[in-house]
Length: 149
Image 1 (cartoon, rainbow, N blue to C red):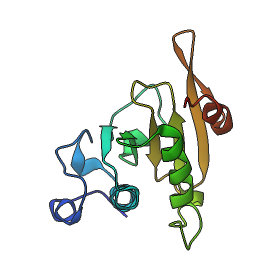
Image 2: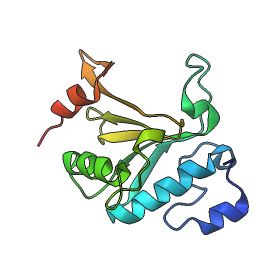
Image 3: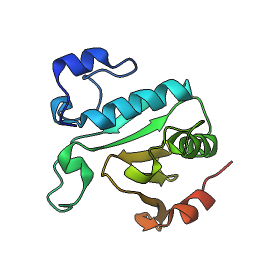
């Protein structure tokens, strides 16, 4: 779909190019409009942690290509946010039908528990947890089980 342009950013309802995207014009158009649609469905603010970011030590990271964003959602419990995210990316009529084309990671150990969402073009799910002060990647289900509350 290509990268965001000035005109694209003007059409985005819930985000601006001034948020934590890194270079907002390196961000994938499909990702930004997916996130904008999701934000409208949630009715809660999304706080962007990072988007485009060069990670030479992780050459396959979708952040390198502007196809990923890390964020948290304010005003809702993380468990509810995860459950709603799975429903909203799932099949119609309730969902957007995006589940098989995106990567979704959950991070319940962050100061503000949050998500990684990317438009990699195939399904991927994972989680990460804090183990002895280190972030350890685990299955989505294992990370979900660590969600408090």
